[in-house]
Length: 323
Image 1: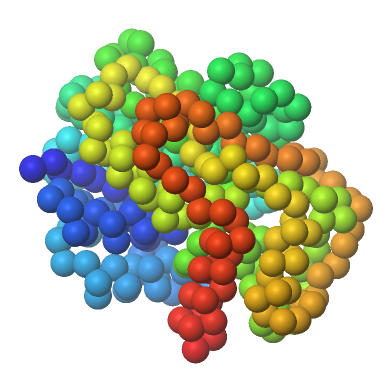
Image 2 (image 1 turned 30 degrees about the horizontal axis):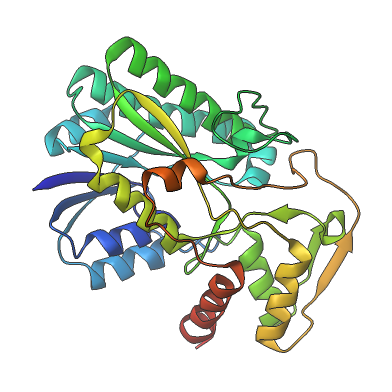
């Protein structure tokens, strides 16, 4: 039986991944440091309680991965695969708290790699990277693009993690795969993300500002598609060798104005949308996921069209949050 450790287990992606892994023939262990506290800024407490109620084969631990004591816990678990999702997420938040975000994300991943170097070089590591590593590049956003220039400490932390993973692969034979996620959204969406702000705007008329007059384009990726992709890598873990990176997304960029139009149709209202021509220095005008490398490896993967994913998000929010 495969033994897997998931970090950031009460995050959005971690939650959906654990829901899928619960019904598999895999021994699952999960680590998070914030799962027992109600936080008005995110759904971590609600996700954790849902996991406790709906999963039966998962072992949960509370642990700060920036502490060296995490090495002892991971060594005790002794996983075959580590899916490292724990991080301070969010480009805009890292603009206001650059040192906190960078230090947390880099040190926690450093400790994961150190576990592999010191205790088990046979462990396979899947770790969350981000489309933010591409920054504002106008070149094609694919894995062969070496001109990476992140515009936030969050994006920089993810790029440096990729570089660190390659160093550990080259110097210590630690095998890992970086997953460059493109704007993940879905049920239990983070509350600091546009999709949640829009839900609040259309349900409670809270104002939401769209920069660049809503002309920014994003390649939105439905969270359950992300979980499916991670499971595919887990099932293929014996083929993970050295270091590699993959874009994770559906190659389906749309403008923020189009997202608003979809929400307007679903809610039957105009919301409280404010258009502003300001462009934040950390915001790329467009993200576009070239997923050809991923699909050449897993040709049966599919990605949910954005309008379908938003409808799923809307139904969840209407039924489970608004009640």
